[in-house]
Image 1 (tube, rainbow, N blue to C red):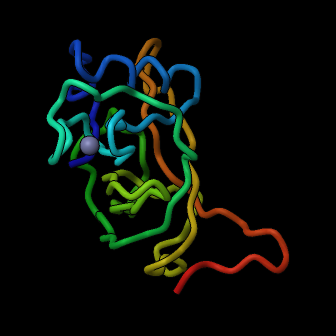
Image 2 (tube, rainbow, N blue to C red):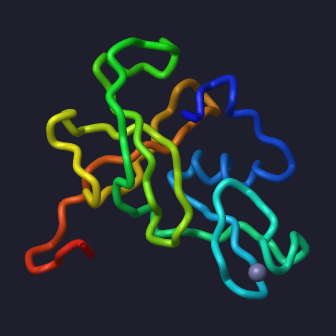
Length: 143
Ligand SMILES: [Zn+2]
């Protein structure tokens, strides 16, 4: 679900992802044999875990689905109600559960192009969220 502060506990496997968030970089876990990307950290379904490595990703995607929360479940997340919990399909393929920010609930739509932004919850704890991405003139989202 949403990466709340108590969930942001880096272990050996996902520490690189959370370390990159401190630098406002978004990573995915890539198989070195077939280049398939995963999130969260995983083993490749075809090649196992030996060739997996963290690589920089675009930090872009589109809204796959969402819901509006009208109650605060974790005040440390610092989101005024109502707020949006969304599943983003990253441009690299994996799905990412997050909050959509800088967007009114009535403006969310399936396929809305979004980009990662990084929120410091407290020193040393930075989480990625997503906001609407404004496309350059002439660029369209895939439908
Ligand atoms: Zn693979």
